[in-house]
Length: 468
Image (cartoon, rainbow, N blue to C red):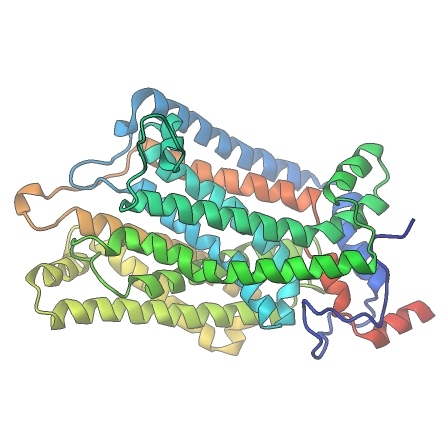
């Protein structure tokens, strides 16, 4: 029986590209790459810290279960949603989570098609992060409807009454966009996982692990036919995923842009939202990658080159987001629309002015430190910047949604939004769900793509390793 992955030094990877190989670290061979990554799952003793972290995250996820159960019993009146702020924390968190999932698709699909080999160290957990973020995002619009048990009405399922969804409703657009995004992302992630799961199957000691990984590997044997079909499917899914990077968050931005509300009715929203999504997504990848490489000793694989490249992408998308803020302010002034002008002044010095200026600091001012190489090479500071950007991008969604709704055309209908205890527990609970899924993923599956890392090990190093 052939092994799942043969250490062929002369093998080139048409998926990752045949350009100049990226040196991981001196002395790394195919065997050591496989051993290092698979040992995290198969042979390393699970640290006590992992159990404590998982228990904490599971407790937060339990808080989500309690909050949603109480919401189903009592109704969404337990949230702070009111008139005029009908969309509040729930849609804010929905857009934030969808944005976080964008970096995984970008890293996996677009950088793959552009043959950027530096993606190989971060694409696996970025793809997993996408799936977990989309799972958290889907909770909010589902329960925002108030009757989640009737959610299947949102799909165009033939029925005896001949009632179809309202396809002009942004809610329906979100259903199709998010479900398509989740499906393609899951397929892309799983297809990329098959060769590595086969490696775990062949190395696992326990019968149960062998059976589970064996079923997941779909009969993979590493033959030329398997590789050909795998690489064809992987490239096709990458091509299919690439338009999703642009389309999904553009559709989410249409939820707002098609309205006539000041602050929402603007044509810049699609590219503005996409740039913001990639911005927050890469910030979250950095937030996860930096502790992970330190805890599991993955500095050889997630190198400073990877951290610097992610910081540069953050800087670029952050500048696009800052341009969007400037265009919003300029159009409000130049357009001569009284209501648009008031909306901008209300953001600057209205009752929610601390949130607006906090987002300007987090998203525009503080990330300018990334211009300096010394900052990009400073791992702790890079970690702080990524967290600050994540906070800033959440504040941006809050400002767009709540500040546009709470004061619209008629002063008689103005109101204030204040999040309730259940708003916060639902949000914190989704963070717990995200972290729980992430901890389980790190422990049960390869967090870095084994076979893709092996394709970029220099041939000379491989031969040197075999010589020893």
